[in-house]
Length: 258
Image (cartoon, rainbow, N blue to C red; front, side, top):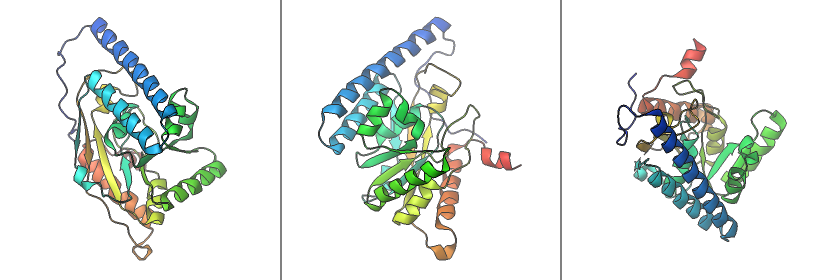
C-alpha cells in the first residue's frame, strides 16, 4: 500500500549527524519555550475558550518556528454544531497538530498517564481535557461516564481511538469509546487523517526533524440508529475504513487477526 505522506520541507538528502543533532535540540528547546509560555497564558486567562485559543496559537508558533508547515484540508467537513473528531495516532506530535488545527470549542480526551506529565498535564487540564483510565476497568468506567456527561452537554471532543502509538507503521485497532460517546450524544463523527508526524518524529526517535505536515478532515459520518445494529461498532468501522483509505498505511488490526 502506498503511503500518502505530504512532501517534506526542504532538507538535504545527505545531512550530517551534527546538523541533525543541532536541529533536534533547537526544536526541543523551542517546544519547551513555547509550552512554558502557553502554560503561563492558560494559567492567567479567565475563560476556557481563551485558554484553548492561546494553546492553539502556541502550537502554530511551534510548527512555524520548527520548519514544520502544517496544511489543513477539509475544514468544510467540520459541522458548526457538536461532533466527535477521531484521528490516527503515530507520534507525540499528533496532539500538537490537533491543537493547532481545531477550533477552541473542541476538548481532548486523553489517556490518564498524560495527567502526570510535568507541564503537559497542567496545560491539558487548563484547556479542559478529559483524562481516561485505560488499564483499570472500574476507573475507566467512571471516566467514561464523566466524558459522556461532557458530550451530553453539547461539547465537541477529539479522540485518538487507537489509544497509543507504536514503532510499527500502520493503523492499529480502534477502541469503541469515542464512538459509543458519539452514539449516546447522537452527533456526527468526523474522521481525520494526520500525515507527516510519523516521519518527523516516530516512536523510535527522541529528537524531531523538519518536514511538512498535513491534517485532512474527511466527510462526516451521520449518527446511526440501534435498528441498524450496535451504533458504536458501526461508527467505529465506518470511521476506521475512511482513515485507513486516506492514510495509505498497512492495516495492523487485520495483520493481528491473521
